[in-house]
Amino acid sequence: MPPPSIIGWIAQQTQVKQLVLSHRMRRTMGNEEQMLSAVRQHYAGPIQFANDLDCFTP
Image (cartoon, rainbow, N blue to C red; front, side, top):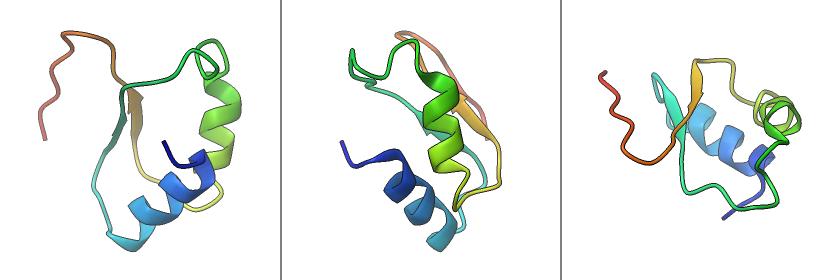
């Protein structure tokens, strides 16, 4: 998994409308605010964290 700041950069460059972060590693569980802060360095759109069996619509 790339670092959160790179995820944000890619999301910004590709102009995604919504970013859903899934397959989180144990090291990121409980550190969602830090992860969001790093992603937000580059991406300002909506971000959600996915859990098993979650469904998202565009």
